[in-house]
Length: 537
Ligand SMILES: [Zn+2]
Image (cartoon, rainbow, N blue to C red; front, side):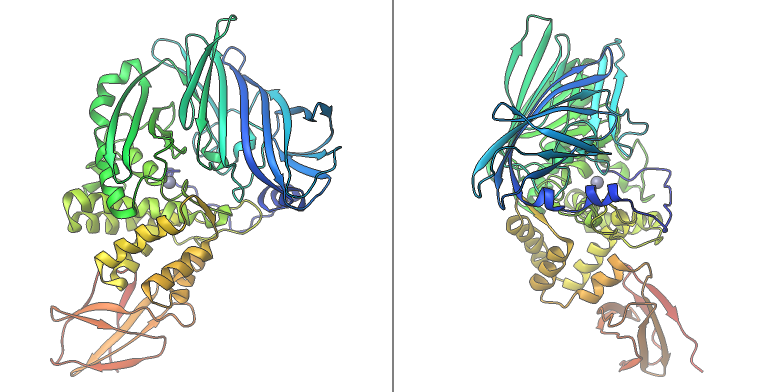
């Protein structure tokens, strides 16, 4: 996702309901079965803004049970659930359906369930920040339709197990649309079926595990062009779908795709979905990281809708949506947060990747200026980590503060090749996995060889910016960390009258002897900290 503007600060006093818990936690009715495969097979009708069809859910029984939870949000209706031609009892509770299985569910065995549903899905009032379907028209008056549902969840438009912890191993998405339109979904286009009723079904197959909010439909009068990128894992198919009227502009703007792939493969390792290919698909909203089908609506111009969110000038050197949303293929789609409270895994790294992209093409100083400039977007309103088990995102600071946190961590590591190998290692070791934030924190501690618990507690679980308090008496520099969590002990690079020095402040005052009297102290600006020169008494 991308940060919305203007930013709305959310209230800290949130009350959670039973619906939030059913949605945001791994309930016993979700826990006993493991998703293997989805076949979503739907008809999208632009003339009355409806969706209807089936989702066949294939799963393996982990622990036999009788009741299964399926999520489908109002105003859509689950019409029927069936297993082996037997219609099952279903009971609705808000956005949740309780499905009573008739057949004995044997441990280790694979079963399928066909869910039939339909209705008018919620229309998004503000895509992609408010989930739903967007029904627009192109310049020629033809329908231009797209889904977006991060946060609100995939159950907003199709019935599923709507929790990030479980992904199907693969998925077939069949979308029937009027014959003058095309659907572009995730993965590769397996077949096109022309129907006798002036409609066409597009069958898209995703070979890899896919997170639920990554699944998408994009329907319009698309035209297509493509290229092959020779990357670290071989030939990667890059396919681009845009409205006819934008073809020329897209051919120029999308030249940033191979540049993005080159930079990110260097920093993060191979693109994580070679089997499914890379796609960039034009949509009637800003954009979203849909897996192997990144959606694009940034106006074929650089920056974030033509503006530089960092105010450093560097933000206009790249197309924000191509760079940011594609970075989510590594952080978000390959490495996925288990609970949305840990969405910083997606957004902090995607934000940080913008800085690395700049560094790749314009040098380290450009990346630095960009990440420092972006601090103006940090609010420190509430912790970056949200509340677990209730489908609650943390602060918007997961973007810019998160990016600055990682930039700060790079300074502590103080070895760029080691830092790059850690980022690549993360993408190898957590390849196609759903993870908890703590796993990423522990991984970074282990690989850097640093005890980073206080560091992450400070930047992810607290809103305070640590302050280095210091004073100089003669040739003695005295300093400590204040405004910080207990045990905060981040080493810091300072310049003593222009000469680099690493100091190790803790929360009580300690001193070092300098080799000059009354030196001028400057803290390295790359660290996201505050500084206070105290007057010696
Ligand atoms: Zn994002």
